[in-house]
Length: 404
Image (cartoon, rainbow, N blue to C red; front, side, top):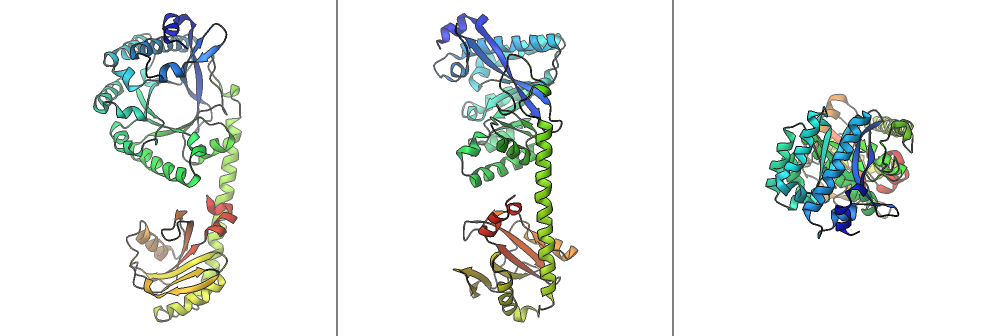
């Protein structure tokens, strides 16, 4: 579309609203304001207008201001509650030092609109602009109660420090990445983003959700808000809970039932392995015969495991590694004497086993040696010696409850 046609025919420019769904109540928490232009035949998205680098920023500001004004007038006229998400690029915000946007918001505040309902979305790649000036402006907006969201978060890992500095209220994650990345790679990204969100106190919003799997993924990975065509397309009217394409309440209940079933199976697995090992603790004859003890265990955990060893309470390995290669178990004598206390949570897990006299199942992780996804089952032989059994990936893959 011709930018001059858009800017010269603002009467043909209207906002549409895509709902944001809350994980807590499974209802409509707010709406994102998007733009549409009627070209004489049909309503067209204004995405290409706003994303095109040759369109002057002043044009974009004028159109965005028009969309915001129409949206706020409609919100107040219809008494619609919830948050209102508005998109602004860093370059747009820098026009007139962001005063155009603030003046409009303050005008509606005088009419009774609460500015704490406004969420300004900035894209992560906008941090490549003058970040200090952008950060200063967004901090200024915060003083009016306005919230900040960072869109397409995770696109550039180098921006983690800048996101931490900005301390946005919301991190928006594009679920398209689930399709565009290998599953484990995206799991790693999600782990980092979850840690970041927890540290800075930000909520996670998953957008572009287009199917049930993506909604389940968002729910399982701590998404507080959801958005996408699977839930509702943008509309000229505000959405309600009843107008959504899916029953969000029933979907979340399904996910809860599924997750509880998987957790229950994992707990049964842990209890089962604890019982198996308690029966074998009686055969423990101390560290002088540690390799003989492990050699006997290999046949009893041959299908599930590919490696096992024993450490003392300080993390020092007192046994050889017993490692399965091509269905044969081989001792690796050179591993004896290794100290594993540097590993995250190692000493904490040892102390838990010592205190509660119970086995522990680790989270899933990538093994340094094999590069495969594994889990480790740990068990206290005494209050000073602890057994570690590494589960092989094929066994984990065959048991879905171990993959979660």
